[in-house]
Structure formats: structure tokens, C-alpha cells
Image 1 (cartoon, rainbow, N blue to C red):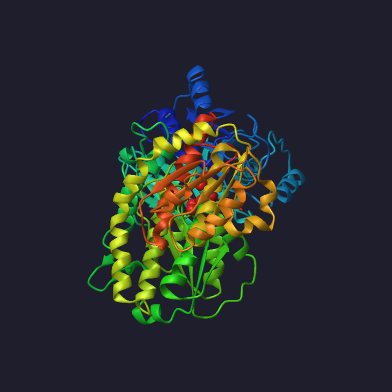
Image 2 (cartoon, rainbow, N blue to C red):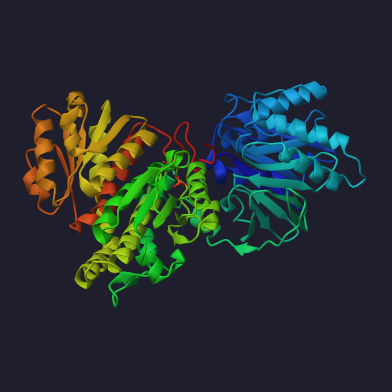
Length: 618
Ligand code: M6R
């Protein structure tokens, strides 16, 4: 949510900042801006709209200099316009600031500033208040060392802040010097040769350096060309490790695909393979998950599981509930992270909590993780981003290894989460009642999944034809049972977020308890009805819709197609797989349907309106 890029070195800052912003655009795309220091002037260019608009502005009015900061915004305070775009300045016009997060007490700080001095605010943002606060403290501080003075001013201002921030600050009269700080919003330092970088996410800078220091909450970093110093908000210096970024600039290219979303859908044979690589033991008919950091005794003592997350990750958790209960017979519950973190869920001491998050930075999921740990529950992460805050703050966990996911709509991370939740169910199950035969069967079926996904992807043209046929519909209903009920909800979310069509997902049987009133000829119902233990029940519900002239698109498998002939208007037939693994296949035609429909409707697939990939505000 919002992206920051900073550069200090010997090259022209502008192209590096713009390139980094393009890579961070998935974090927000309401407006963008840069502040580049030229001599003792801060040149700023900013405007509402995408990075392309900023690039155009900068082509018309170039800004030169070898250090600067930049920002792409997802609006929280103040509407989307040029004035509210970052950077913002202090009262002197010398200090420029970009910010990701929310300053919750900005009104109180603004009143305080207005009482103490002369402050003209030019925007409605909380960020501008922080810029003025830093400037006002900087004026009051003594000292010849202007760098130390600015660092101290930033520290003192941040101590007064309630809320979250990732910031980058420059001063017109302090050459080659950027300050970064974070609390609750990610910030990473890229370490180069005679140049250094700041960014919200390493993908912005991986083309220039793969050496990174992931800042922790309350870190303040002073960055120069050839050195950096990290200290705490309290002023103490500490040790920080330089890590190698595990992907390259090549991995974040779109290649020949028209959209990241399509690329990521087609990467699923590999991402699913990578999620289970080295984690299956045919010898013991179980999964090996050393990252959980738990002894066999501790795993055996787990009496209850809570899975928490948001959006697509929550839907994966919903499948996880079915999986863990089926394979391990451990009572499992799913909690919206945003609810879990604020309510007093009764928990037993033997509860194991999993926070599921692709980015590992989602504010609500992080809040749930912290709350759970505060209460003393062992809390593990299922994350894709290995350097993320959730990955670092959890007691252990399992990485997805899905590779960077850039499209705002989560696709490959979802199927990786499902594989990992299956592995967790298998591991816990084999420590309890799951037989060697059943364990072996699951492993063998898991191993055939990548090949089966390849088969499903071959249906993309069939799904595209369906999308073209239904392009004028008023919305869509999604239904599924058991393991595929969460897939109905996930299918509806994909449809909503990238086509902007009205869509709802429900358990099939709920149809007759109210939803059937919506059924009409221009509202197709998508039934996720593989040839599984509940196929005949789904068939009944399909009949009920058919009787009311509602069009049916069926996602099925095995013999399902035969039985659906004449009943469903469209039939997408998938390979057969164990019931508990079927969501890993059934979700793919739904991802493709949303994708092709969005393209037909001319939507911005990778950057749908109002959304951002990583939601780091509450
Ligand atoms: O990074 P996370 O997995 O924690 O993100 C959670 C949700 O914000 C995310 O899944 C969101 O719902 C996606 N846009 C769905 O496609």
C-alpha cells in the first residue's frame, strides 16, 4: 500500500526512481511523485494518475540530481489529486518527505503545530503534517552537524506519531543524504557499490543490487553513497544483516504475457511443484516441514488449529480447515485476521495459530499474529515473501516459494497456500490416525498435480470463449460444496476485483435459503462440482436453477461431464484428483474466467481500480 523508492549515488536519480516506482505500482496507483535534490534546491514533480503520467511530466520538465526520493500512492487521507500526491514539504520548503502508512494522530499534531507557529498546509494528507513536524523540530535543534540534526529531528517527530509509517526524507542543504524509518510499513535498504537505495519492496531495486537489509520496526537509517547507519528510534545502534535477494530482475518481468496475472496463472505447475519440493517423504508417508520449528511431541500435542488471513489467503485458510480436520481430525477454525485481532476468541493452551499471507505485510494479518503471540499461542506463518514482517515475527512457518506475485489478483500464491495446508494436514494426520496407505495416496496425488495443472491450463481457450459469450451478464453467482465451497468464494472475489461485476460465492445448499430469488436468465451460476462425494447433491442444486431458467457454467471432473450434459450450458471438465486436492485444480478455470472476462471488458487486469497488492493499513 503505497510504494517508496530512494536513491543516492553517482547516477542520475530520475530514471532509477521512475523504474523503481513502475515496479512498485502494484502497491498503489492513485498518484505519484519525486523529489530530486539539485544543488541546494529540491526539484519536485508530482501528479494524480499512474507512473506513466509522472514519467510524461518528467519528460516535459526534467529534474536532474544524483539523489532523491519518490512515491506511488494509494490514497488514505485526502482525495486523489496533484496536491495530495507525495512528496510533501515542511514549512521551510527544504525538507521533503514520502510516506507509506497512516499517521493516526495527525489532527492533534496539526493543531499543536498551528498553536506553536506559522504553518500553511497545502494538502489534506496526514503526511504533510509529519513533514511540518520534522521541519519544526529541525529548526529548534542546535548543532553544526546537519546530518545528525536531521536524524534527531526525524526521531523526535516519529516519537510523537501514533500510527504506521515507512518514510524517506531529504533536505535541500544536506547533499547525498537520505533518512529512512519504518514502523508497520515495510522498508528495505539496497546496498550497492558507491550507491545505496531505499524501497518498500526489493522488487523496486533488484535490477541494481541483490544485497538488502530488511529494516525492522522503529529502525531509522541514514543512507549515504558509500555508507549507511541503522539505529533505533531511541538512538541505539545495532547489528544488521545484509541478505541476498532470492530472485532476480528477470523473475519480475512479464515476458511475452500481456498481463502479470496471466503469467502467474500459467506459472502454477512450477509454483505448486516448488511448494512441495523436498517436503514429501514417501518412506514415512508424510510431509517434512522443518521450518515449523516444532518437535514431534509438540506437534502431537496440538489440540486445536486456528487459521487466519485476509482476502484470498483467508479463502485458502477456509480450504485448510476442511483439509486439517479431514486428514488430522484436529478441530480447526478460520478467523478473519481483522476480526481475530480485536476480539477475545476463547483459545485453549494447545492451540496452534497460522497466519496466512502472500506478502507477509498485510496489516490485519500482522496484527492478528502479534495479538496471538502476545497471548502466548505458538503462531506460525505461511508466507511467500521470505523477508516479510510476518515471516520474521512468527515462531516458525512454511514458505510458499511461489516467486514474486505482481498481479494484484492473487493466483499462484493461492494454490501454493493450498499445497502447504495439505502438507500441514498430512504431517499432523500422520502423527495421529492417518494410515500409511492414505498418506502414500495423498503424496502420490500431490506429485501428479503439476502435470494435471498443465492439462487444466490447456482449457484457457475454452474458458475464453465462455467469457466472450457471457460478457454482457449483470453478475455471477458461484456455488460449491465441502472442499469447493471456499473455491466458490474465491472465484467470486477474483470476478469482483478485476471485472467489477457483482459476484457472490455460497455453499451450494444455501441456494434455496434465499439466494435462489436472484436467479434470472442474465445471471449465470458457476457450479464447482467435481465428480466427488457430494457431486449428486450439487446436481440437485443445478436442477433447481435450471428449472428457473438460470444459465449454468459447470466446472467438473471425471464422469461429471456426462451427467451434466443437457443440464449445464457450459461444461469445463478437469482431470480427476482426490477430493481434498480438487480445489487446486478447480480454482484455475475460475482465475481464467475472471481474467478473460476482465480483458473482454477492457479492465486494467493487473491494477484494478481502488485496489493495491499489499494492504498495509487497517
Ligand atoms: O498478502 P496477503 O496474502 O496477506 O494479502 C491478502 C489480501 O489482501 C489479498 O489476498 C487480496 O484479497 C487479493 N487482492 C485477492 O486477489
